[in-house]
Length: 350
Image (cartoon, rainbow, N blue to C red; front, side, top):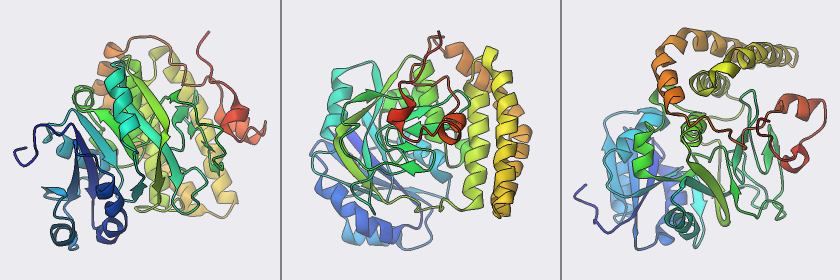
């Protein structure tokens, strides 16, 4: 894009949809802690409030990419990144407060190690600043049946940060709340899957990166604070629907052929148990959301066959140590392992 200088190496891309007040609250930290070699760019997803007018008036140093409608998280980012020349892009949520020096360690590790495609900082809660934040914490992992968890967050149990995850680590997935990625690699693997619209799309992206031999890391010396729940609250049944549907589609797209049938059989029973638990707990809308997500997964599955074929063809076939071969649900509820440390090291196939 002609409006950006060629020597700017990093685009910090913030996707916005009717988020005027969020940007007023969180953009000042991003602008204040933006290095000279980076651009701050708001990609507006067809907002109907006066976000754009506010940005032009109050943040003239911030670049604007205006999309014609709300394309959701995935396609909104894909359309924005397709128009940027920067070697690195940062996918940064509009409700993230950054800190001094947050970006440098993330770019330095990508510059230093050409096997790494993406990186994230430690994500702390904006509300409870000494605790990790649900969406990413100190880096993401996944169990054998597709349940994601983090250093610092297992299911709904979030830990206080007491330095227990201050070592850099290789990850299975990095959070979309603050994801630094090589632009060319992002495009090569197809970016975020636009059919997901929102939720789990960054895990799907990272799965493609990992199976094709790329590494993903957390640099805990970089810290940001995430408000979280700014779009849909955790109790919203539509969020439950999207998370469940997209998780099942992600498994179908990425699981090796020898594992697909067995994993999906187990997930059938685990998902129905989750729905039953929701009904018995007097959360009927959540229960129906789980069942509806499974129906929608079955309906959409044929549309993902070509992507599954491509993913399997491009996979290196090497084990991914950051994908556990345990069942997180059993570990959490039956064995009482409710922190990442208690879960122990993830298991690679023997």
